[in-house]
Figure 1 (cartoon, helix red, strand yellow):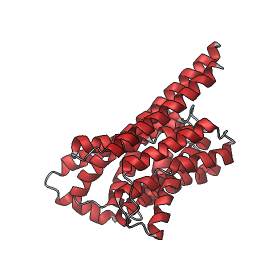
Figure 2 (cartoon, one colour; figure 1 turned 135 degrees about the vertical axis):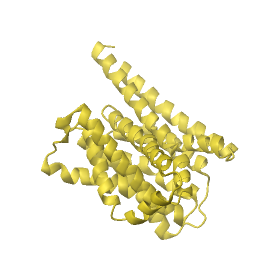
Figure 3 (cartoon, helix red, strand yellow; figure 1 turned 30 degrees about the vertical axis):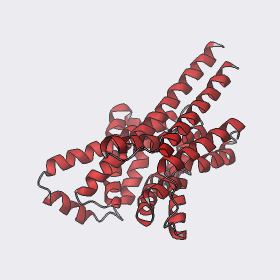
Figure 4 (tube, rainbow, N blue to C red; figure 1 turned 90 degrees about the horizontal axis):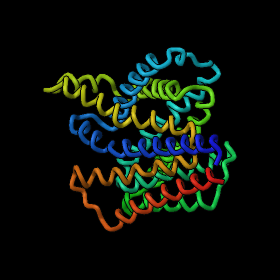
Length: 306
């Protein structure tokens, strides 16, 4: 193997690690969402808190990292609108709405159709090869997500189905549009502007006056604000930055499958913090997801040696 190939292989390994790290942090989201829900915030308001505080933090990071990164071309505004509105805000609102319309497990299964959409869009727009190994990894990952989330189709209406699929498409769209944006801008610029547009959009649907009232009536408003900041950092800033950095070296289709580690981590957090049962089926699902991740990384290692 040549030195250049070794360097590329190392970068791809780091990129894969960053994608998996993002999935692990996203997997902790349920802990924070449940806590904020207990404080009186509804799902849309929690989304707004996450994206608004994350936008502020990303802007601070960009300010200290690269102030020139605030300059974007007017022609790229639709691209960032797509990332902010069409992906981050759209998929999150769809996902939480789906949770209200159907069981949590059914909503999670529909969300994790995202690797399918990413792979199809990657083939269409980026001409990525749809190899047998990728297809096997995709089947393992999706099957694992179904088992981890629980096999449940109860109460799924046509409206719920379409909204749930919308969450998967919106989730997958970040990989596609993010890959395009990274050809022109740094990961710090991409994440900052994506969340700025998402935050701006969230103000139209979150009922800000009601949110302000919840903060004002809280007996420990200071602690609540700090917890909101922690929520943004753990469930948005770290994972989205890691995922965007990972997209610099990892194909969008492969990244989508690697990120399916999220429901596995969420299931483990549920068992650890909320005493949720870890069944034989969910354990099998975890093994299937891990098998998909290993299969993709073996594929990348083999490619680097050739």
